[in-house]
Image 1: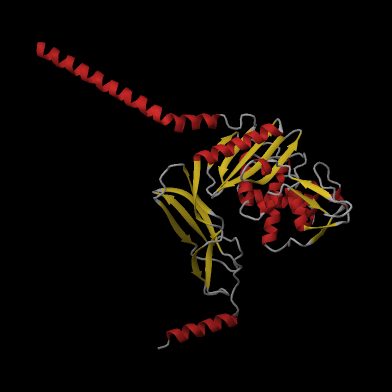
Image 2: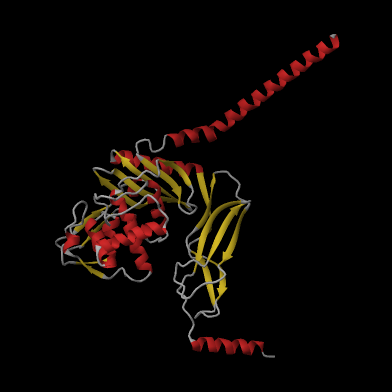
Amino acid sequence: MDKLYTYRLVGGKTMKKYLLTIVFVLIIFTTLTHDTYGEENEEVLNLAEDAQSAILLERDTGQILFDKNAHEKLPPASMTKVMTLLLIMEELEKENLTLDEKVRISEQASSMGGSQVFLEAGEEMTVEELIKAIAIASGNDASVALAERIAGSEEAFVKMMNDKVKDLDLKNTHFANSSGLPADNHYSTSYDMAVIAKELLKYETITDYTSIYEDYLRKGEENEFWLVNTNKLVKFYPGVDGLKTGYTNEAKYCLTATAKRDDMRTIAVVMGADTVKKRNKAISQMFDYAFNHFTTKQLFEKGDTITTIELLKADRHKVPVVTAESISTMHKKGEATDDITQEVELKDHVNLPIQVGDEVGILTVKQGEETLSKTPLTVDQQVNEASYFTLFKRSLQNLAKNTP
């Protein structure tokens, strides 16, 4: 009995010492990691306190860093013009529009209320001037003018907007006009607006306009009009170069913004803030959080050639396959990035003609076994069917190569 008692006593002391050691280690670990994780979590909890809805994401990866009521349907006000600008940029890429083309302003366009640049019925503005009027001064009249030029009427253009919503697989957005003026059945979410902004930013020249703080329409003329950017963060937050503000009594103060530092571009959306100051503060805090805690590693720029495909019946036999957008990986600062791999998968069959932007494959980026992103691969020029003469000449060349 004495020996058994002694064994239990020693075992008890050993267990007690072991438990104390564990507690001590946990205290040290908690102390060492508090600055890294505790402060970060606290920072996240305090983001966008004054917004009804908000989201923060990294552009290339699409990774969401923060969200608050991100799928709540709300009026987007003039952030609607992010979609309007997206369709304009698509038309420019398709060469259905040119920047120097002059657009005649209709009575309907000139009669728009709200934010406007006071276009006059019958006057002519270039496409580029109208883009500036939309991107800088949020001109409702300029939005309608380009909507009419592209689709024939604003109603037809709105159908294009909602078709694009479906293409992007957005479930909580519907547009009733091209400007964002109050209307029934006109709503979006901070998540959907971020996705539309991500799509718009594929057209890298858009920030050439959205980053302008001030400019002029009709420069030097008697009716010269001073354009001042409604997004003051373009001037006051380093790296901000877009995108679009919004305000109505119902929507309150909204902003879809983007900022870039080094290779990292972020998108932040705020909806339903009570004041401009609170809106800008929420956007700034989200950008601070992103740039303080995360970094990106760019793998490819938009348009980089990944491989080539051989198309026997195309007007070009070997066609470069390029990235449809820039591709990056995102990591917490200090995290290892040495196990990143890429896989290319091309379609077995491609129908001709191929338009720029048509998907011909997928580039998958992985870290270890985890899939980080899947990015469409496309071509950088239109590829048409080869003529009979080209096919005949190609056959003769192949015959000559194979003849001993």
